[in-house]
Amino acid sequence: MTTSGTTSSETGGTTRTRRGVGILGTGVIFRAYARGLSTQPHLPVLRVADLDEDRARAAAAEWDIPRIGTAEDLLADPEIEIVVNITPPGAHAALTDAALRAGKHVYVEKPLAATVADAERNVATARETGRLLGGAPDTFLGTAGQTARTAVDSGLIGRPFAATSFVRSSRAETWHPEPSFLFRAGGGPVLDMGPYHVAALVNLLGPVERVVSASSRPEQQLLVTAADKRIDRVDVEIDTHSTAILQFASGALATTMYSFDVWDTELPHIEVYGTEGTLAVPDPNYFDEPVRIRRRGEREWRELPAAIARTTPEPPHPFRGLGVADLAAALDGEPHRTSAEFALHVLHVLAAVQEGSLDDGVVAIPSRPRRPAAVAPQA
Ligand SMILES: NC(=O)c1ccc[n+]([C@@H]2O[C@H](COP(=O)([O-])OP(=O)(O)OC[C@H]3O[C@@H](n4cnc5c(N)ncnc54)[C@H](O)[C@@H]3O)[C@@H](O)[C@H]2O)c1
Image (cartoon, rainbow, N blue to C red; front, side):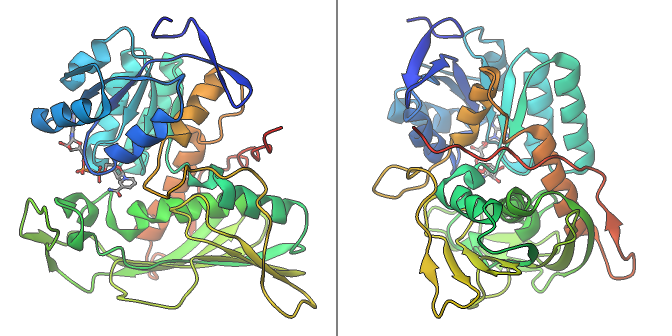
């Protein structure tokens, strides 16, 4: 079997072209990609690169990845067709641009880039080079996201007119060894966790037209207490508590609160309110949790049957890579659901939430992508 582009393998009854993958960044989320991609035999990881060579070497040894080296080595490797960019947000744009210009297709972790201007430049480079660019999150492609999507599309809650979406604190300073990127431009609850929420909402309700928001910064510095910490304190360089109203092109209104500062809350993750019922959507950071519904006239909440097969293997563990498989499938002619246009729209909305203020008022969102195609149940 060759390593790139010329042979095919069977995945879930579908023929997939084999394409070599290279991963930039072997930090905290790397393992989730290594695990997820190990379930996609047509997408072998052939090389990893990290500024910290020891980290790259350890990752390669653990996951039986044949080659390590610099980012430049990875981009020059002719057997790599797809580059997975899972470096911190501030490094995304330059590496994505270099990878596209090296002739690679690229899948980037969220946010697409740390700033809208950088992300727009990346999308332009993808067009210019004729390479495919895709971006996280991919969780809306999972069982919960697609079960909610089927419920909305089949009219189970009538016409959706509103939603709520709440990011509770992730307290990254307690578990991430180097959480600085989460507390500077490109991070924060809005750009770090907000992508899961806004992608889930756009998947269900379509694109966002206008945003009004306000943000604050309750803490200036935090103590890092992660067991494997590489720094002692982290300066909070951006607002970490934001609240917003999103108006969708459909007319639906979402109320959001994205916070790193709320210690605990009993607020739901996402709820969608329709003229005939309410949908309770589980944490959009995950794939397989149950979706619940309570329709007009029903006395209790009930769990909806899953619309597609379970996404992640048992037992549950951090899992990523569906978006890389989505990009590869798009290269084989299928719809590109985690497209750069979709990820850019999500970033446009999140930037408006992060940067908006009550003084500035309403921000018009400049992009209007279609909703990603729904995922069909496996035959
Ligand atoms: N940590 C999580 O739970 C999580 C979950 C989902 C998504 N993400 C996203 O994944 C990305 C990475 O997050 P992380 O937590 O793994 O970060 P991390 O800091 O743990 O790891 C990033 C790695 O990238 C390397 N790196 C930085 N610049 C580089 C460059 N120019 N070339 C090669 N390597 C470089 C760093 O040395 C580091 O090892 C971010 O975009 C984040 O939003 C993280």
